[in-house]
Image (cartoon, rainbow, N blue to C red):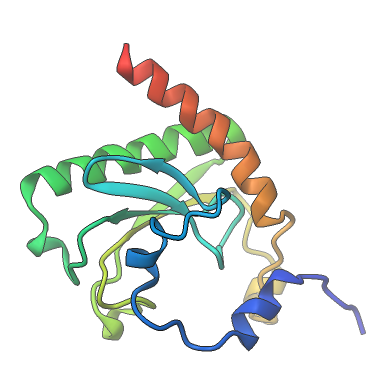
Length: 164
């Protein structure tokens, strides 16, 4: 039997249910290594339980359950932050492609159904292998703190370029 070392998953399987909204609370409890960028209407945060290394989410500050409740300004900034995320991930990880997605409602697979958010997931040719297909197991080669350390400088450089 082979063993896979993924210590970050213990927090997911053993943690108690979060009281309140994790996306509303995240900007308040900023401990330094989760939020990559803060805009006026939205922020970019590392997914604590990523599908792939570099997986981030773009989240409006305002607690709304679906895209059609966003203001035009919120929607535009969220789109810009999706693009900002793609540029930083592309520069840092050099993926072959991306999955960009929104799950609206628990029936559609939203883990946090009450607060809409956009997933930005880097993809590589061949990143689904026998582990994901036969064993329904995803192996991530990087700790979240390392993901943050890699993406934060690219995100900051992109902000500086956009400001000029």
